[in-house]
Length: 269
Image 1 (cartoon, helix red, strand yellow):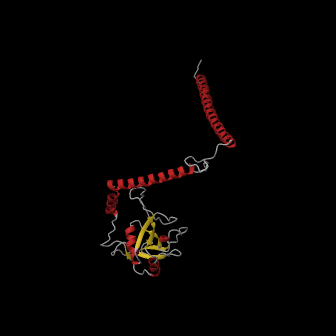
Image 2 (image 1 turned 90 degrees about the vertical axis):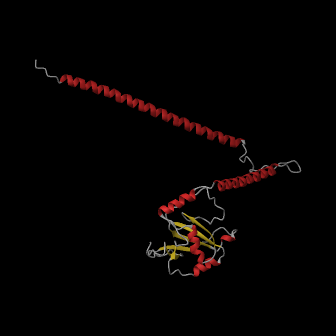
Image 3 (image 1 turned 135 degrees about the vertical axis):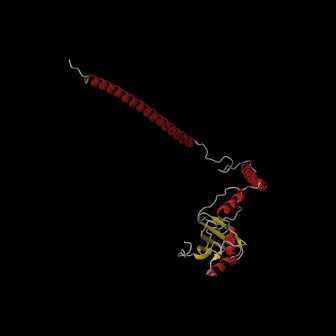
C-alpha cells in the first residue's frame, strides 16, 4: 500500500521508493534473487539476476536500471506483466509484438557480475529512493501519453533494416534444412538410400493396415455428416408440421367465434 510498509512476502526484501522528492507517500518494491532453473548452459544468467515485483505502471526499465545501479553495473532489465519461466537473452524487436503493460508489473534485473547481487543482499534500504528527479524525469498524464505516442512512431529506415535482417536469417535456416534433407537422401557407396522419418515429407508409410484405418475414419466422418443432415431435415419438417397445425387450429377457432357471435344476436320475435 502506498504510504505505509506492508509485510514483505517470504524471501523478499522491501525497497521503499517515492515518485519525487516533494512527495511524502511511499511505495514498496519487493525483490529477491532469481533462480534460473534448467539453464546451466547459460552461465551469464546464473547468480546475478534479481526478481522484482509490485512495480507501478509509471516505473520504466531505465528507472529500475538507475535504482539498482547502486549495487553494481546493471546489464539489462526486462519488465513483464507476469513472471516468466526464464530470463530472455535474445534481442527483442523494437517494432513487432509490442504490448503496452498495464497495472503493476514484475521485472528481471540482470547485473553484469554476481557481486551486484551480493551487494544488494547486504544493503539495508532505510530511506526511500526517488524515482523521478531533475536529471531523470518520469512523465505522467498527458505528457506521458504524448511521449508514448511519439515513441510509437516507426522509423521506416530502421524497420526496413530489421525486416531485411530477419529475412536473411530465415533464408539461411531454410537453406540449412534443404542441405540436411539432401544429405539424408544421398546413396551410400553400395547405392543404398537410408529412409528415415525426417525429410521434406515426413509421415507414416501407407501399409494395408494403415489404409484400412484411414478408410474407416473417413467412413465414420461421412456417416456422422449424413446423420447431422438427417436431423436437420427432420427438424425442418417438424417445424413445418407444427406451424401447419397452429394455422389449422387458428382457422377452427375463427369459425367457432363466428358461430358464437351469430347465436348471441337479439331476436325479439
